[in-house]
Amino acid sequence: MKVYFAGSIRGGRADADLYRRIISYIQKTDVVLTEHVGDLSLSKLEDAPNRDQAIYAQDTAWLRESDVVIAECTTPSLGVGYEMAYAERFGKPVHIFYDTRRTVLSGMLTGDPYFHIHPYSDESQIYPVIDGILKIH
Image (cartoon, rainbow, N blue to C red; front, side):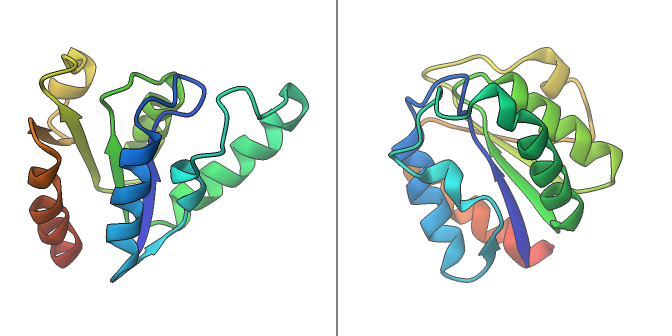
């Protein structure tokens, strides 16, 4: 299965290590098209504006190619929000994780019945849910 993993880059890299762990977990059984999201050396300012069109083209191509989108949304990101709406437009299943101790998810996400919302309060709660997602899709 091809997984598009979405996590904040320009919105903040506070959860980059968590992204890396989730991506590594998924890669044990499936392909993650966006493994760079978990790259700890990736800076939120690293992408120069002249690369933005290439980023958009690549990311939207990966979204269309993916079988499922898994998004970690504890750190808010405009880009991740756009990616999830784009995935919905193309009928890709979208699973959203967020840490209830650190954020309140937007009503635009929780109010959309298309999205599968997975709140958690401990990282260990994420992995069994991912196992179920990957078996379904």
